[in-house]
Image (cartoon, rainbow, N blue to C red; front, side, top):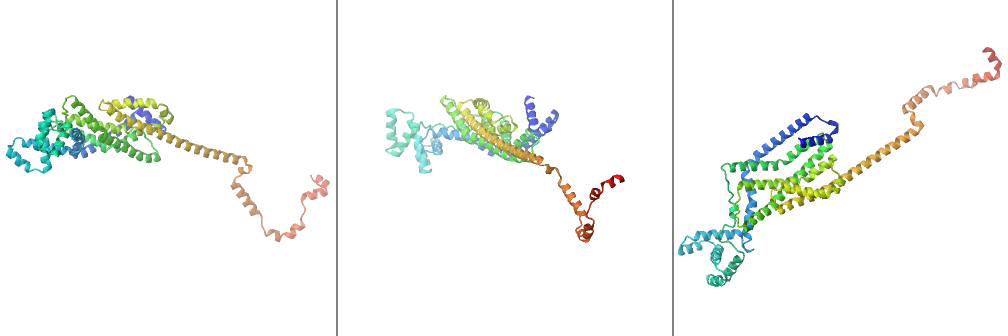
Length: 434
């Protein structure tokens, strides 16, 4: 409830003109959850049809572990596939008689026959030490320097002619009858999250940031694309870089302790899917931080001032969400998150700079408007309306007749005095009349 309360407060702060009661917030939450669930169900059904391909993709890091472990015990010019094929051929020829073995070896290519001899001599020479091994190889190779050099290189690398080179990692097994089916459902679910992540992100952002303006809605789609790109970057980084190295590290550690790495398919698939998804979500840090910056909860000054605390928080968060407890995996998650956080600081700086520039332009425009208004108020003629001037001109234009000066010119000349002139001539008469 505390988390929901904080989310509702963010919603109200993002849109203060449309504050909603608690029940309406819950209704929006119900709509958002319904959309998310339906989207996941559709995506899960679509991914379930390709579950075998998804299984092969997730099994590839385990095969990479087997290849790495096998290559560590072979010369650089010796392919792992050739060595494993030679061991299978040598095992098949063990139950044959000498004549049958000779006939069998004649039926295979010369390179494979050479590799089979290497396996046979490495197996035998591995039981000897010192001079005994050297004497045996001198007699067994019959002066074949190429064969002798290859066997010596294999012995120096401690090549294993008996084991399967770690192939038990590929033969992942289940412990329950229903584990395989439930594993397919789980893989479909996680694959559905990856495929439908843009829509899930859209629904969540629409719930957290309601009442967006048209310009903000237009910016939402690029933000979604950036968020989806960051998510895929985290998933691919975990799948191609972190996961193979983590598996090799754990397999080598088990081998150093004399423990067979007999991993179970259910545990491995859960580990691999959680590993990749958590890395994908951790790469969403810039989206979360920039949302907080847009809401005013974070700023460039705050982020740059509390950088040391952010580093500690990132390390603690990486330690919590990392499926493993080794320092290698922790570092591979914490370092990219810190780099992304530094990127967020620069993004916040440029965003704040843009806001200051926009605010300065608005202030300048407002100041220019006030100055124009002041100049307008200081001019007394500006109080007169243009409409009054138009009426005044129309009135005088109507009273003025240009032909009257021509027709009544003589009359005007004859009666050119005013009543004031009569008053000046005889003021006493005017007094008596009054």
